[in-house]
Each structure stands twice: as structure tokens, then as C-alpha cells.
Image (cartoon, rainbow, N blue to C red; front, side, top):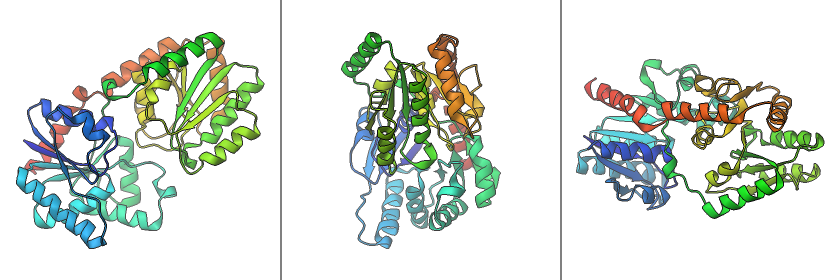
Length: 372
């Protein structure tokens, strides 16, 4: 079978890499099509058997960009005799819609649908997202919790949607061994508890609550270091909050980092305050590193694989600060055994989010769509 994966950007995406490499190792011809030239994503797939194709991102006009690239996409599918096409993210799906005018390649719209959709999207964005969903023959989402939102807000028939877990592999994550060793040494010498968070600095991630947690921990006399990783529109506001609460000796906010695993390797706890997710990457990444996770109950797909006190700690989404602070204090006082909970999360991630355990669901979906 020839499988193409249309992914507009060239940044590292572990879930994409693991899936494409698996298709290749299973004997299929795999083509990665991007709007951006050779980059981090391509580099990780070099030598894996994946064929690279590049459409180009120049925008002379909307018709040139969408219809012109749609024709290019159709020509690629024709040249390689593509049997099935994945379209990852909205931009690629719109181009793929025009590609169908020139060649009717069976395809699926791979949609990462968050549960805060109705609150955050503009009217224009909602219109185009709904139009794309309506025009799509089939939609793939990363968790079953996405399906009710597609049904409620866009009127999509659930029979038109398949949920398959994302896939992860530790080997594709970058880690600076020298920096990791230094962080671990500092941790051992100081005796500090190490907290880490990773999120885009946008309101829905509620990173400001993490600084409230840090303030309470500081006032309680607990010794800790909190690495708050990420960047975004509210980054400067958060830096100001950090300064106003005199947390410079406790919280480090380096902005965007490309080696998240470096920090996770030295961490004791991952703190995640987001109130909206489709299927959070960072929770699984922490699981792969055997780290304890504290996050909010009832967010995204958390309740499908996280169980409070068993493989993670889930707190009230409406009031997470006091609960998270109390759990962190109990961990510091050895009232909670991090090793048991973190090992249970590792096993959960291995069972549910590794490619060998989800690939059959992809083949089942592909075969069903090809035979319908």
C-alpha cells in the first residue's frame, strides 16, 4: 500500500514520526508531504524509507495557494499512486479539498480538536473548521472525548469520526546530557524539590496558577525549583507576576526550549494546570520519563487513562491551586511515594500510546474507508 501524510510544517512531531516509521517498517511506501522545506521532522525520518515531497508555501494569491497547491498535491498522489492520504491540521485539509477536484484519493482529516473550541475560536475560524469537517469524508481525532464536541458544535455524525491514540517513542526526543547532568547535580547539592511545567503561554493553559502555587510553597518554607517552560502571548505578563511575587529564586522561565526531556530528566513532579486539551503530549512525555504528574480532573482525555492516586494526581479544575500545593507538600514530606505512581503512569503510556499498540486501529480505519 502507498500511504501519504500531508503535514504542513517541518517541526519535530514525535507522534508523526513514530506512525510513519511504523508504516515503512510494515512494508508500505510512505510519502511525507509538507508546505515547508526540509527541517527537523524530515531529519528524524531520514534513512527510515520515507519519501519527502514539498509543495511550497509562497502566497501570491489565495487561489494560487489553495487551488494551485491542491493541484500539486493531486499530482503527487497520482505520481506515487497513493492509496490513502492523511491530512494533518486544517490548512492541509483545505488544500486537500481542492486536490480532490483533480484526483479523488481516499483521505482522512486528522483533527486535533480541543474542548475549549467554542470559547477560543473566532467566528471566521469556526466557519472554516466547520466547513472543512462537513466536507471531509472521514475525521480522525486523538481521543474519544473529541467526538461529542464535533457532534455538538459542528453537527458531525459520530459515525464519520474515528478516535485513535497518538503515539510516542522516547528515542525521538532530544536531551542535552551535559545540561541534564548539571541540573541533577544542582538538585542533589541543594536538596530542592524540582517541579517542571510545559505549556504554550496562552490563557487556557493557566500558567499564572503555577506561580500562585509557587508563592504558596515559598510561604510554607518548602525548598524547590520550578522550571516553567514555554512561550506565548502572555509570557511577559507572567514574568511580571513572577517579579511582583519575588519568585526569581524559585521559578525559572527560559521561554521555549527544544529539549524538554532535559528538564524532565531532573524533575520530581510535572505540574499541568491547563483547563482544555485534546490529548496532551506533555503528560505522556512525563510518563515516558517515569515522572509523577499532577493535573486537572475532567480535562480532555485525562480521565480515560489517568486514575487519581494510582498513576497520577487529579485535582479540581475549578480550584487547583490549594490541592496541588498540598500534594506537592506531601510529596516533599515523603507522605506520597512518587516511584509507585510514576511507574504506573509509565506502564499506562507504554500500553496505550506506543505505536505497536495502536497501529492495528489505523489499518482497520484505512481498510474500512477503502472498502466503503
